[in-house]
Image (cartoon, rainbow, N blue to C red; front, side, top):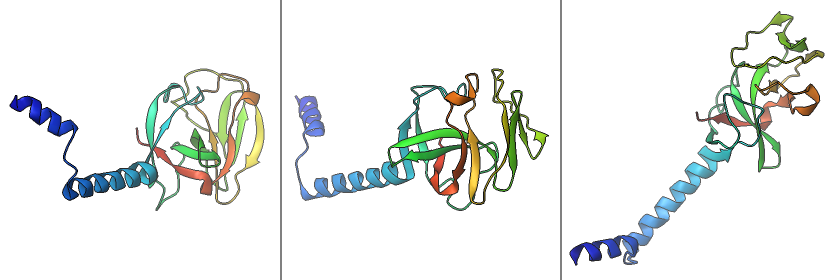
Length: 166
């Protein structure tokens, strides 16, 4: 009988002022943490495989680049359209650098880049282009399809929301 009372009290607590204040504080903290610090997102698509798979769940750590800029090789979350659509991409070139793809190999400032995260061969070709000031050049890890089927390229640092938590 005592156990039933404890269970009932756990699921249906008395609405005392102290309970309401605790519930309000928890709701406010959850809103601040999951609305502004650790924004949850689900990965849709195969552009970052095998590092990040379609359907996986992750959090965007919004303060990752609050005091610093993304570095080459970082995986970043980029605001694509509005506040709801984001892309997960890898930084391959920084502002002022020249980037190009030649026969399936990435070159930055005419130097071939080592990309241990690429597991499938690809045959992309893209003429050299300079990354503008306050911008980065991003591309997905899964480059097995034709270059025309991918979202990649130069993006403003203002569009970088943060980085995936894991």
